[in-house]
Length: 358
Image (cartoon, rainbow, N blue to C red; front, side, top):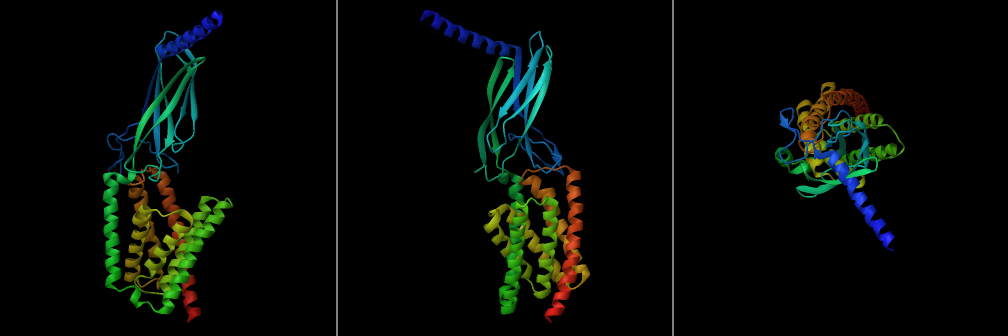
C-alpha cells in the first residue's frame, strides 16, 4: 500500500517536473493580430477590437491568432506542436507544428479563424476564449486566450452608413407618397405586378434547387443576373409607372427572405432599398426601358450602385469582410458581362412581349 502511494506521488512530481521543464524551456506568447491598415480611407479596425487580415479569396474576414514560440533552453526542441480549439462559431480545431526549434530561436505560428456574423454576436460584443495546447514530445503547456468580439453592426462607420440608408429610404417613401404610387395603378396593372413578383420569388426557389443539386456559384450568379433583368425590364415595359419596380423588388425580396433565407434588416437597408431608389429614378428619367440605352444603362447603374457600393463600403464597414482588390475586380467584370447580357435579353424579350400582348 505504501509502495503504491509513493509511486502515485512520484508520478505526480514527475508530471509537474515535465510540465515545468517545458514551461521553463519554451516561452509561449498567444495573442490576436492587431492592425491599423487603411482600406479606401476607412480604418479597418478600431482600438480594443480584434484585428483581421485582408484575405485573397471569398472567405470573408478572418481573425489572426498569433503564437510566438521562444526556445529559452540551451538545446533544440523537436516537433513542437500547437493545437487550438476555438468555439464552434469561429471554426474547427487546428494544429500546426515546428519540426525543429533551435536554442534561443523564436518562431511565429498564425492560425486564422472566421469572424462570426452579427447574428452570432448578439448585442454590442461577445466575450469568449480559445483553448490551446503546446507540446514537444511528452512535455505540454495548456492555456486559454480570452477575446472580445465587437458587433460590426454597432461600429460608428456602420451606424453612419445605416443612417444614410435610412435617409434614402425616407426619400423613397416621400416619392411614393408624392406620386401616389398605389392609387395610379389599375386593377390589371396590380395583377401584372403580382405575377411579376411571383416570377421574382420563383428565381429564389430555382436557385435553392440548383444549389442543392450542386451547381457552381458562377452558374447560379449568371442565372440570377439574366433572370432578374428579364423580370425587371418586362415589369417596367408592362407597367411603365413610378412604383412598379419598388413593388416587385421589395415584395419579391421580402417574400424570398421569409421563405428561404431569413430576413436580414442590414441587407435590406444597404442593398435592396438603394437598388429600388436607383432603378426608380433611372427609369423615370429614361423612359422605362423603351430604349436600348434605358435598358443597358440600368445594368451599368446596378453594377455601380448598389453592387460597387456593397463591395467597397458596405462589406468592409458593416460586415467587416475584406477582399483582395483583384478578387473584387474579377467579380465586377463578371457582373458587368452578366448584367449587360441580362439587360439585352430582357430588352428584346420585353419589347416582343409588349407587341404580342397588344
